[in-house]
Each structure stands twice: as structure tokens, then as C-alpha cells.
Length: 256
Ligand code: BT5
Image 1: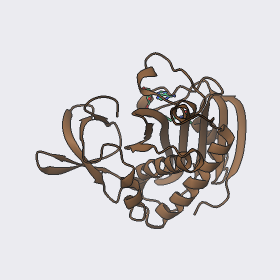
Image 2: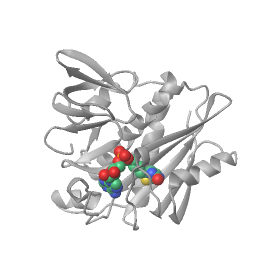
Image 3: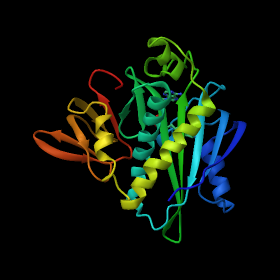
């Protein structure tokens, strides 16, 4: 169970995930959240970069020490975190985002949030897990290579009549929401208690998507998720399971 959450804030760090990792090595207990105004080396998945250069966005990470957790339940934590961010954006701002499996939240067809879950093992067991969340809040423009697919809370609020995001308030709402979903997840270490709600917000459900991994790229129809939080797709009238990892799922007409 995740109970108390303790917040620390820094003006600038390399990566909030890396800050949490060094604290985890110093035997820090579960529930520490480190947030930063900017990251100089923000990380995406598989060596990609996450842009959080100014004080416009949220970069925040939590330390988890799940007891007796199975290794193959770890990727599911990303799926749980995505639900939390979606929920927080909806509850504070009424922004009705969708989850682009496994780790993006999208609004108006563009990415507003990315999630990176990392873990370390010790004595053949999961030692700790770090969940890092990046949300674009006040950003009005983005580097050229992502401008076509990135959005922010303020840009989305503008479309529905205005208003402004608030980074501290949103950060707290995200982790409160994460606590709620994570504690449901940890009971069974899977998505049984959360799947129904998750699927309501799954982007591209029932639509054609393109699955891209290192070797292959093919079209499929996204059907939903299974109890492990893996994506179920249909290819040539057969169901196939897509595991997290080095896979991208795209709509066939663009980023979402
Ligand atoms: C992610 O990876 O989306 C995970 C991002 C996790 C960031 C958080 S911030 C707090 C914590 N500390 C860290 O160092 N990281 C975590 P991925 O699915 O691989 O997507 C990365 C891709 O998203 C990049 O290659 C760009 O195309 C795009 N991208 C980068 N910055 C972006 C931004 N600010 N907004 C939207 N898209 C972005």
C-alpha cells in the first residue's frame, strides 16, 4: 500500500527519475516525490529525450518499493499512472484526455504527458520502482521536431474558453489520484479492478492502429487491454497481445 506521499522540489535537476534513484540507493522509503522546475537531461523511453527545458512543465517522479511484486507486473504500473494523470486533468480542468497505450496522455490528437517507469533489482527481487511523469502545462510552443504532436494544459484550456494550469496543484492531484489507483492495482498486482475504467479512455479503441517494434510494422485493430495491462489487438481475425517495451502504437493517420 502507498500511504504517505512526501514532496520535494528543486529548481533544476538532470532528471527527476535519476534523483529518485540516487535517493533509493540511500535507503529512502517509499512515497518520496521529487519534482523540478526544469530538467537538463529529461528522459523518454529507450534512450529518447523528454523536453522540459523551462518552468512551463511538470517533471515529477515517485519512489515505490512494492513488496513481493512479480517482475511482469512492473510495466502495468505505467498503465496505472496514465489513468492517474488522465483523472487529474479531468477533475481539475475538465480536460477529457485519452490514454495512448502504454504511456502517453493525448488531447486533441496531441501528446500532453509522457510516463517513464524504471526499476532496479537486488538479490533477484524488485528493489525499487521509479515512476516519472512529464506534463506540459504552460508551454505555448515546442521544439520543431515535436511541435506537430505536442500540446499543453494552457493550449487545451484556450480551446474551451480559457484558463490556466497550475503546476503544483496538478502535481498533487496526479499523485493523490495515483495513490488511489495504485492501491487498487497492488491488491491483485494487475488491472482486474481498473480495466473497465481504463478502457473507457483508451485512444483508438476499435480503430486501426499501426504496431511498430524493432523488426516489424503492421496494421491491427486495437480492442482493449487484458488483466496485465497489455494491449489486445486483432490481426487477420486473430487476437494478438502487445507487451510494453520497444513498441509504438500509432493511428494510421498520424501520431494518435
Ligand atoms: C515518454 O517517452 O513519453 C516518457 C517521458 C517521461 C518524462 C518524465 S519527466 C519526469 C521523469 N524524469 C525523466 O527524466 N523522465 C520522466 P516516449 O514514449 O519514449 O516518448 C518520447 C518522445 O516524446 C520523444 O522522442 C519526442 O518525440 C516526444 N516528446 C519529447 N518531449 C515532449 C514533450 N515535452 N511533449 C510532448 N512530446 C514530447
